[in-house]
Image (cartoon, rainbow, N blue to C red; front, side):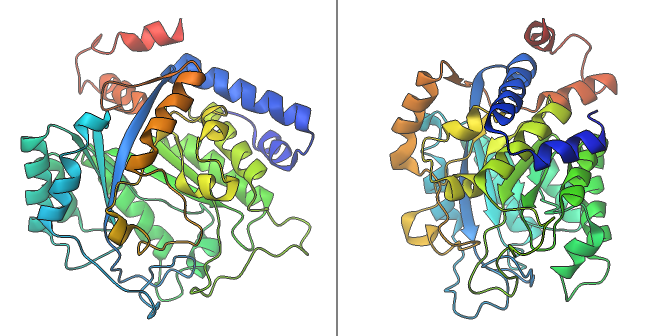
Length: 362
């Protein structure tokens, strides 16, 4: 584990040559621990309805100017059926916290995807009850994404003004997901108004202690329909929401959690304006998540402005960019090596069943 004071120092670093060395080391750690294959995961944002009032998110319940939608099972399955021919082995079903997305509906959808396609299923549906999460796991969902946004309780709860004990609730759901044997994904925003470098260092320490199987890192991007303001520039210790700082956090996360799956996120892509994603992939990332939501709905999943994500038409340039880096697209669903190691250590899978781990670390 990198000492906290050293993490803070790296987060404040501005020397380009030192930052190049940080990203290079992170890339080496990525290569040694998870290899050169890049996992493609297709996202379907199937509903922008949400009961939450998060002050940073454009689909929060208070945004009355947003046209709401909810895709049908038929529409979702039409998207899913195209995944295998596009070299996508995982579907990510994502939505706001939509209470009309019921336990039985999700369970039936997951079971249908597993039966008809064999794709791995990741869910990202917000904070849900243990009974729901358990049934979806039994139906075949393997992974669940639930970002903490920040490990600082006070900062997090300042962005959840209508909820008491919001931080505790978030962490309880993450622990429940782990107890139900999901691959657990979480993540943070970089540059939240009021976020200091020390807070951001604590986020990275938190990753090391919690041990997530997947980590999503992206810059805070203010939305005009939310109450959280732009990042202040008159505070000496305010974390900037820029590309360099976000890449530094990604690199440090790779070094602290070497076996985790770490995507080059859509938020990173938006602020960097880099459709080829090379910038993230060269600093520790090993996952790309193209948005395959149908075009008529894609812009309505308006979590932040200027949201860029490679869609189906962008897959060829992504494949070409990956090849130009000497890397390849994985032919499997990309189960987290951190998850597999933990399962093996706990006796959940036979010892020696992940021999490629040793090959990667030689």
